[in-house]
Image (cartoon, rainbow, N blue to C red; front, side, top):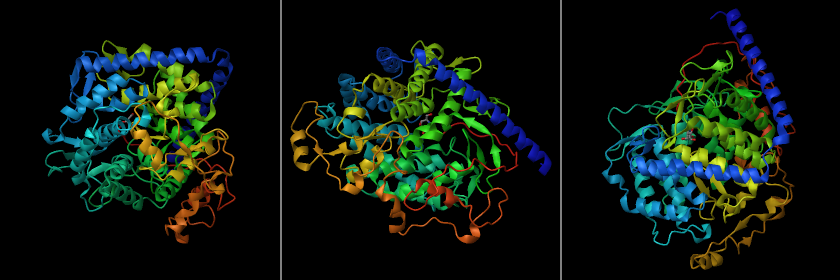
Amino acid sequence: MEGGDRMMRWIQIRSSILILTLACISSCCFLTLSFADSVTKEEAKQLRNEVGEMFYHAFNGYMDNAFPLDELKPLSCKGEDTLGGYALTLIDSLDTLALLGDRERFAASVEWIGKNLRFDMINKTVSVFETTIRVLGGLISAHQIASDYATGMRVPSYDNQLLNLAEDLARRLLPAFDTPTGIPFGSVNLLHGVDKHESKITSTAGGGTLTLEFGVLSRLTNDPIFEQVTKNAVLAIWARRSKLNLVGAHINVFTGEWTQKDAGIGTSIDSFYEYLLKAYLLFGDEEYLYIFKEAYAAAMHYLYHDPWYVEVNMDSAAIVWPLFNSLQAFWPGLQVLAGDINPAIRTHAAFLSVWRRYGFTPEGFNLASLSVQHGQKSYPLRPELIESTYWLYKATRDPRYLDAGRDMLASLQYGTRCPCGYCHISDVEDHRQEDHMESFFLAETVKYLWLLFDLAVGPDNLVENGPYKYVFSTEGHLLPATPQISLVREHCLYYGSYCRSGDLRQTYFISEVDKDKHESNDSRFYGSWTKAKYSSDYTTSEPSAVSGLIKGFCPGLNHGQKFGLSYLLSNDEHRDYETNQPEESTTVQSHSVMLLPAQSSDSSVPDSVSDHNDSQTSESDVTS
Ligand code: DMJ
C-alpha cells in the first residue's frame, strides 16, 4: 500500500476509534446517571442466588446428560468428548462447587474422580495448554481444598488421589517440552508422547501459560522438573521478544522464529502476560515480575490506544489489526492486580459498551468499521469481561460494576439459557444459539459472577474469608498462597494492590505448630492464624484501593539488578517510536519505569500508540 493511502487509512482508523471512545464516554455518563437504580444489598443477594441457580442448571444438566463425557450439548441434551475424554466439565467445576459451599457434591465429585479417572488409558492427542489450565489446574486446585481442614471442605476419605492424578498427567505432558528451544509443542499424545507429524508452531499463550499449574505441582511434589520446564519456556519466548519488548502470536518451537508477528493483548498471547504477574504473585519469583514490568510497559506504550488496544507488528509497531477481541477483556482485571487502576476503568467501560450494544461481546469487533468483525461474531460464554468487572468492583467498590454484572447476568439468562444448560451464541447480532457449553462457563464465567455479587452482599466464601489468599489461574482455578507454595513475605505486596487501608497489615501465615493442630481438627477453621510480623519496610506504605503492587511499596522491585538480570536496550537499539529512527531519550525503558518508583521520577501514563501508518490486515484466529 502506498504511503499516502496508508496514512489515510490510519486517519480513518483513528477517527473511528475516537467516535467509539466518545460513544463509550457517553455510555459511562449514562451509567453514572443510572446510579439511582443501582444494585442494593438485598438485590445483590438475589442476584447471587440467581447465579447459584444458574450454576446448578448447567452443572446438573451436564451431570444428567453428558457426564462422564467432556462437555455438554445443552440444546440437544447430549454429551461430547472435546478434549481428552476425562469428564472435563466435572474437573473444571470442582473448585466452583467448593466455593459455593456445596460440600456434598464437591466430596462426591472428588471421590468419583479419585476412583475412576486414569490417564494411562487415554490414547489421545491433547492440547498441552488446554489440558494444563483446565484439567491439571482443576485437579491441583481441588486437591488443595480437599486435603486441607482449614478450607472447611476437607474430604474425609481423601488421600491425595487428585494430586497423584495431576502428577501422572503432568508427566505425560512433559515430552512436549523436549524441543530445541524449550518452548513446548502445542499438543502431545497422553500415551505415546509427541506425534511424529505434530505441528512445530505454537501460540505464545500456549507455550507461556503453564507456569502456575506446573509450578504448584513442583512445590507439592518436591520435584522441580515441572517448574523448571515451564519457566524455561517463558524465558525462551521472552528471549525472542522484539527490540520493542513485544512478543508475537505464533512461534516455531524448533527454530524459535516467529511465524505470526502480530503483537497484542488478546488472542494467542493474552495469558502470557497474565502468568508473568501471577507467577510472581504466587511464587514470589522476582524474575517474573521483572519480565512482566518490561512486557507490560511495552504493551501500554505500543498497543494501548486509550481506552482500546490494537494489534501491531512486533518489530515495527505498525498497526495491523484495529480490533477489540473478546479475549482482551481480561486485561483490566490484570491491571487491577498490577495496581494500574485508571486505565483499567476506562478500558473496562469501553469493552462494556460493546457488550451493551450487542448483549454480548463478539469474538471480534472492528474499531475501524465499528462493526462486528466478519467471521468473529460468536459469543462462546466467555468469562473475561465478567472477570474484570469482579476485580474492578473489588478494587473500587463502585456500584457501576454491580450494575454491569446485573446486566451481563440478564443477557446470559435471556439469551443463552437453554434446556439443559447454557448455549453459545453463534452470532451476537441475531442471538442464534449453538449446541455447545464450554467447561470454562462453570469454571470461570459463573464463578466470577457469583463472587461479584457475594462481595456486595458481604462476602462469605473461601476466597474472601478463607485461611489463604488465592491467585486465580487463567481458567479461574483457585490456587492458594500457602506457605508451601508461596514465599509468605511476598503476599503483602500483592494484597496491597487492592486492599483497603489497613488490610495490608493483616496478612497471616500458619506456624508449623498451628498447622499440626489444624490437621487434627475437623471443623471449619479460619481462626487461630498467627499474625505475621513484618519488618517495617514491608508495611510502612499506606495502601489504598488504588495503590499498587508495583507502584507503591514493593521491596522486590530492585531485585532485577540483584539477580544480575538486565533487559535494557543498548544505546544503538533505542528507537524513536514515530520514525523508528535511533534517538536519545524516548525509550521503552523511560516508560517502563512508570512502574518503578524507586528508580525514576517518571510516573506518567505513557503516550498512546504512535501513528504508524501501515494498514496491513490479516485474519486472526479466535481461540486461545
Ligand atoms: C479460558 O479457557 C481461559 O481463560 C483462557 O486463558 C482463555 N480462554 C478461555 C475463556 O475464554
